[in-house]
Length: 630
Image 1 (tube, one colour):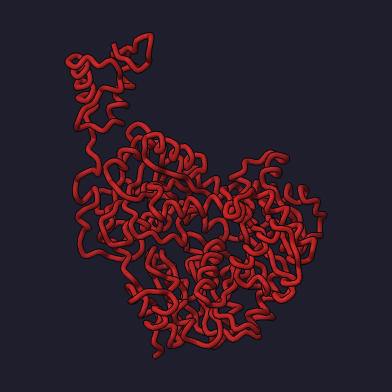
Image 2 (cartoon, rainbow, N blue to C red):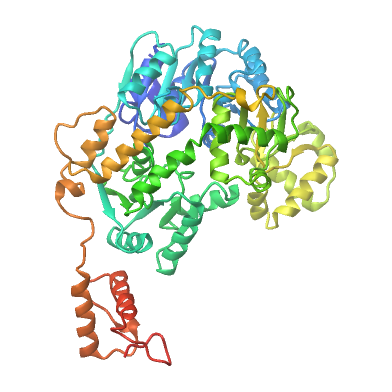
């Protein structure tokens, strides 16, 4: 048996394994197909990175999370471990360079997106690689019963045929009993072998609260009540900005995060939050994967997620250090209606999907019978404007067409700028450059690992910040270095790509199999019912969630709002607060509403009741100042 603990200490800096990490490592290390079920924050990456370092050859890692792939590759490289990645959005040359490095370069890790598995280039190169084992991350994506089923995952069976002796390690943080069984069947497990870590979080208190007046005020009160680092999840980018601004005005340090930010903005905000400079991160579900901050005390959902799996993962980012933490879900009277609307938005009518396909072909000027293998830039905003489509509905139609195999869809965030050195290292000594391009070149050489053998991803905004200039100047300098044939520079594009995986066909011939449309639509409806049931249940909330994942608790948690019989915040009798404010004014004669304080009532409650008193004209503001009460 290899000394896995020494590898853990040497490369990853940990003194001991956590939970079932060692059980999974020993199982896959012994060559057994293994399914590891570990909750969010359980340390999944260690379970394949440690045994891979103990074996000859490379570990093939299949993952749908491109941003996470990039982060893990960079992290491994910083540890001196050779790793690379292949995914949608890379050029053919980039892909070939990366794959050939894995054939000849003694690489230990090759990360690949499931969409790339079926390509002839990949499969041809794979035959010449020495693969120790295959890791399938987010393995629930291979099951049609999983909440994030991706047809491209079914291509993994081809890899097993090409590498019959390589065992498979499947990893997921959320899976129902049906999904657990389906994962093993889809991946062709040679024997049933499930390593399960209990999903129970004894230190996490689940609470559901009906919004009193506004979600912003409820969030503020919760943050005043519960100290420490926090995440607020919301569905829209607009809400992330507005809630963060509201909290900042109330002297609670907050920032926002969503997929539309530049990489520099994302990195800076995530870093400030992780290092404690910012207390609250207000974010869409784009935030969280790969984030390892153990001391999050509070996770608030201001909108109800449409899947228990998503809620469980996001709520589970609180309290990873084992100390008391809270997961609080806010809802209002519109919640059920809005959740039901998501079903129609996510699964628009078949005729509408066909119309989007036809309009996309017109937009890209693709003739009938043409298009196989053609990739074009596809500006979704312009497309929706030209053909009068609602963006969310059109986006989901394109996603369904992609899952059905008619097109391939690559999001804009995948297309970052890339550079690769064209000169040999020794040749650089004979090149004389002006100070500014020389400074940029030195920065690239210091920060871009493997730049002489493969493309490195860069962020012009981040480089500009470090070199005390602007992104436009950096782009111009990169073009100058490219024109001098020192580097090859591929500028970033924020326009997605659309690839036709079949020739253009008549719209009537578009068929969405039940596994893509009807079954998935029914599954979403059932998941929404489960979330609505979670809101309405009077039983232990932890027991309710764990039962969904097939885990029976022997007793109630004892501290969720249903078990304790208490709300995390006291509900104030606003009639009583109203009378106390009137009495305070009569006794103290304040000259400004800012002077009105009730020592045991939060300022947000006082402000809310004052607003109603003014609306009902029980209080009047003086003419000379809106801050003075008469």
